[in-house]
Image (tube, rainbow, N blue to C red):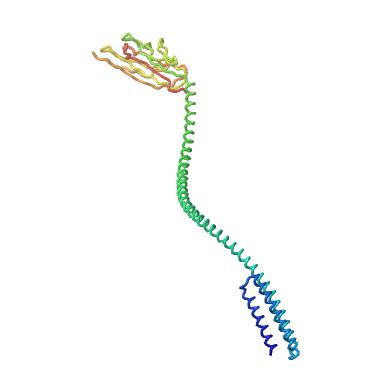
Amino acid sequence: MRSAAVFLALLLCLQWTWAQGESGEVTGTDAETEGGNRQEEVQFEIQGVGAAHDQSSSQTNISPDIWAELKELRDMAIEQKVELRNSKSKIEKLEQENAATQARLTASESKNAVLEAKMSFYEGVVKELQRENMVLETRMSSSENEVAELKRENAATQARLTASESKNAVLETRMSSSENEVAELKRENADRPKVAFSAGLTDAGPVGPFNTEITLKFSKVFTNIGQAYSPTTGIFTAPVRGVYYFRFTVWGGRPSAWMGAYLYHNEKRMTLSYDYNDEQAYVSASNALILQLEKGDVVYMTLYPGSGVFDDSFNRTIFSGFLLFAL
């Protein structure tokens, strides 16, 4: 009975030791100290049990298996202690890792707070840029519309310019043609002789009457370009082949008398202009011809027989002619 009580007490001590190891309420140093004390107590109890066994071995026969079990329990207690120490080391290491992780988490949270602040700032910047982008897009759209309008206006202007250039080209062509014609006319005019004359008969008053025809010598020369008219003979000689214009006027101042004159081309009588002057009156006659003359042909005027003409400083009787164009 006594051996059984000792065995029961040893089991209770071991159970309490395991409970203390599993609770984790003691520190590493305390656990070592307490574990050492407990080991001494267990050894002391085992020794006591052994002493009690020695004292009672002679009285009571205990089974040898009990001692083997006690030894096995002691070995288990030692293994539990080693495992407990390893667990303590792992726990301390985990606590250190947890502290480092906590520090990293705190740093990460701080960094996240900074990043969130930056993100909030950048979101504001992005919103502002978006607003500015919308304004720029609006301005860009307006500018594109203006550019399109300018392009349309430019196209219209270009079309008008092209039409104007085409018209200018036509005008330049016509101008060039006109200039060529003018130059040709100038050359022709330069090559064509310039012939024109105009002369009055006399300042002496009446001329005639005579019984036969006489050549009228218009001695008062007003114009004689080309010197084709001779005031000495009263004859116009054509310097070139061409078409000529001739005009004359005769005036009479004798009452009750005839007034008249002929125009000749070479020996051919071309026209007669005359009139009768009654008492106390003045008469005049005019005529004109366009004649084609060969070079050297002559044109002149003669007094109608039995008639007279009159001229004075008022140039009442004149003879004129000029070249229209050469042939």
